[in-house]
Length: 335
Image (tube, rainbow, N blue to C red; front, side, top):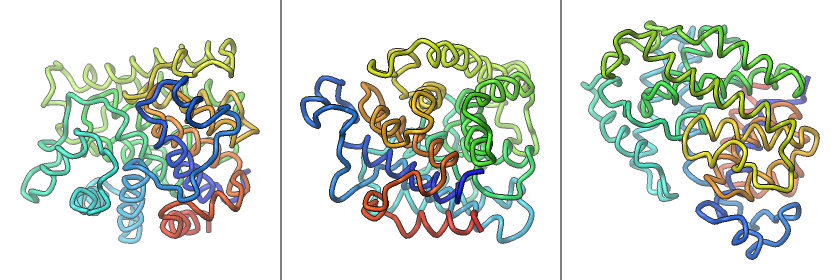
């Protein structure tokens, strides 16, 4: 069992984000020219993060409020998370190249009379929903049904594509399993079993009639589209863990991470290539051709959930932006 896994995971997520933020939109040769060998990539003196960490904190605060009010349920979660997302949308600090899907959905969520399903962007399976979902995997005392439902609901508030829902569920599940002590060698088997078991499960309690905004004939057909894409990427990930050289860009094996299932898989690949070397895993994730900050923030969330707060050097953790907010949530959930 890792030591203070929630604190370790949230700090790791933010550190990965800060490491990958300056390299996003750069190809690997450009990153190497700018920062030197990837295994020695430095963290900036002032470690600024992107919207990935900002939205993780927004979700975390909304989740904390919901759980303080009683048993976690859809309406109890939706209201405070929705409010936090709208607050983020209007924040002067929301200037870190946020995704269009989040901006569009949050603008629509501001209308309190609008059902969240009508704000949701069903055409988008961008990684913006699963790069922020770690708090759902870390919060204690949730049943499997609550964790899955909450992960998919928070995704649906902005990214309603079935693959975004499934990837968020799978990402939260991976964080939860690692925090509970699942060995990295057993993780992919557990996730594959989970994806297969949930392939046609549409939870109307949490998602309402979201599926009716799609062209799918049934809710089962809708949700299976998402799980099938996640099952395909899990298959690629299993091969990559066995055959991919750590010297090569992980994006070559599992995709550049702009979309949900690829961000999940490439972030997890970087962790699984170096399960006992969290800084090396973060640096590998940040030195990628794709959505480097989102890939690295997921890698950090996985590594920190497994190894706990001691995974990260004190001098790195001390200079991360939003450090106090991250520690407050982590300490609450580790207590």
